[in-house]
Image 1: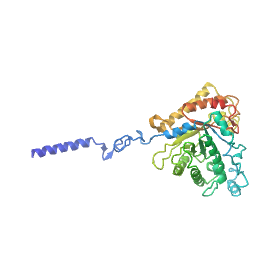
Image 2: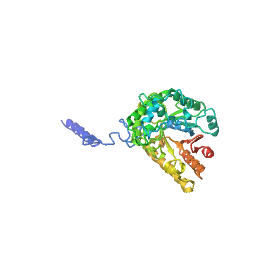
Image 3: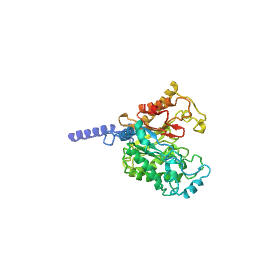
Image 4: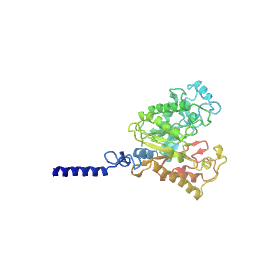
Length: 409
């Protein structure tokens, strides 16, 4: 009996000791024991989470490779994103539909889709000239929505798709990676605040990408990047854009699983709004997609870079370039980089790849244009950004003449 008593005591003490070391409190696991500290259930460290359950460490290495390949680039602006139909969405929202229904692509714009603003792309000379100047990539703005049907399945005209492909193919053949986007989707933005068709336009947006993604699914992942939407604003708020990303992501990933995707934020795509982007999950892994580049537009201070170009910047600021002004520009960029590092956490302390999709100064300023361009470019490159100057050879008052040396010193 004495032996049994001793064994009973040992078992009892062992049980009490084990319970006292358990992580449970009143039957519930503590935060640490539930695995929210970033450990898997087997106790091993998870490569995808930090100590906060709301943050993820991502492997941005693939996207960084693509971003470095993009390097220094230009926009071919005021060409394929030009408006080709005589419509006014602010005066009469039905004008778009009637223009579309009566449109005969065989008699108009078939051979000059990119010449509607008298700035056609000359692929026979442009790419050789850009290569000689030292540029590495092309951002190609495209106004798909205006050309496509406004009724399901929202078909894009074959002749327009052919013209876009001609430019993409020529650029790639000459060694230039291309960023292909949806630009000037004014029916989606509704800047005039007169439309009531947001659901229809959101559906159209997804179906446009279904067509684009399918057409380019066999293109090299090293030489083609998809940029979701240019300068969302008005009814495309940050939250609406983030919802749209979730809708369109699986559509693109279905046919382009390895394609790098670029995201431009709402609020006119400003660099200052990049932290508002919520990157969707990869449909296959159900983890936050890491093959992503964030792209912001940088035109600060707006009324200097856009002098006499927008209603709120007439006449605007004519001179720029003091030491204080240059330091303010640099600080604006560095502060945003720190914010992005805190939100989008990469392996080994890396930052999510950043692209400056547009930057530039009009020729309307009196002084400082070259200084602004050089200061911005230097700061972009210091932080490892790729960039695309607006525009080559020109887009309205935004011209490359006079600042080429500041871009490729």
